[in-house]
Amino acid sequence: MRKLRILWTDDEIEVLKPHIYFLREKGYEIDTCSNGNDTVDLVRQNSYDLIFLDEHMPGLSGIETLRLIKEARPEIPVVMITKSEEEDIMEAAIGSEIADYLIKPVKPNQILLALKKNLEQKRFVTEKTTVDYRQEFRKISGMIDAAKIPDDWTEVYRKIIYWESELEKSSDSGMSEILQMQESEANNAFSKFIVNNYLGWLTPGNSEKPLLSPDLLREKVFPHLSASRPLFFILIDNMRFDQWRTISAELAGLYRIVEEEMYFSILPTATQFSRNSIFAGVMPLVISETMPEFWIHDDEQEGKNNFEEEFLKRHIAKKGLKIKWSYNKVSSSQDGKKVNEKIKSLLDNDLNVIVLNFVDMLSHARTEIGLIRDLAGDESAYRSLTRSWFIHSSLFELLKTLSSQSVRIIFSTDHGTIRVQNPVKVIGDRKTSSNLRYKMGRSLDYDPSKVFEIKNPEKALLPKTNISSRYIFAMNKDYLVYQNNYNYYAGYYKDTFQHGGISMQEMLLPVACLEPLS
Image (cartoon, rainbow, N blue to C red; front, side, top):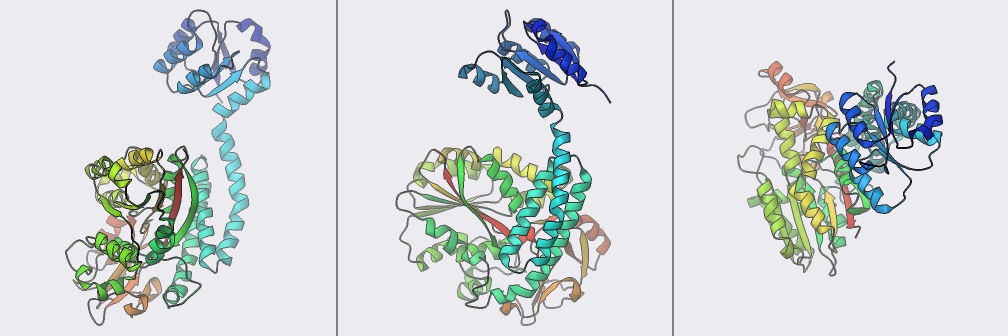
């Protein structure tokens, strides 16, 4: 195994010989230097794993040397060592992206800890994470077996999302594969739970039902309306709970999360149904019956979400809310800039609703564009791409601006998405809906053991286009493929992110309340 090579620069390097001997005995290869100029030359000529750098030296100072090191080899971690505890020096060093900061006199064990933290952390994290997940594996399996009510499933899903994040830090791919198997086991059990309970939740007066899409505004948004500060409801289309956690991590220095919960999307977990239901405050069947001019059926070519503002207007009026409000849909960076340009007028409103379509667009682009599929090859990469979008988005700019105002933010989504793996054959006519995770039609032929079938859509409060129409839903990581050209389409859609069916990723959705730190 290659020895780790360290460069230690200090104008009193001779005094540090005991520390250097100590590190050599621990197996590190140590080069020494007494000034900044020679340090920069050594860095340009050699490969180092880490540099210890004195801050106060004659000639080039430590900060000046650090800048030149970063220009030459920005990837090498630098640990700054100084006699001074002055705050401006610390800030200058931290601003230059040092790996660590130590105050003289330093003890050998402090130096050793800095080395292990910066050079061996990945191995330590992998070892500890592996041990911890092995201990949790049986506990999570027990939670899956014992899950009987909606809250049980939100806790199972939180656990799985937590360990997905933790195992990302580990280099042990075997543990990630075991977690994926456990997540699949959980989704199988969750699908059975939904099959057994979903229709019952829609029975009037059922006190055991979870918070569903039509309840979201009434229960989680309207109660936060206040005369003293504006409320922003931000809905990111097609955002999973793990993607929300990725975004919320970037807001840590700007906002505190007052409340973070999950609610259940209705079926189908598709924008046409779930988001319209959120803004209307009623189930899709009620929308189609009471506002037929605003409901577009699956087999019609028009946009399915063109009337959200009208639904919201009627919902607010029905609740008797005397408020000033705005509705804003962001489908491009230009749309986002326009919203940000009218921030002053938005702050005069009681409620501002902002709908962003980027994550949904990303999901579709990943299916259709090979390069995007390569960039978002799995859940970890999908989260990373979501983070990259967010930190460069007009939304993040808006949130940074709002962080200095007296506002409250509600974040949520309409449905999630799942990476599908297993094709299930379905036969239907030309009017059958094209979604891969659910089908609605009158002439469907399928294996009923592989889907959740709803023969009477009225029981699920869903509209139908024909008297004999029915719905079927894919479960876990299945996807529904027509018999015609079956092998081609099964291969084309395998491993793509889809929505509309039954899984924790599609149905268990974040709703979080945030307040600015300032």
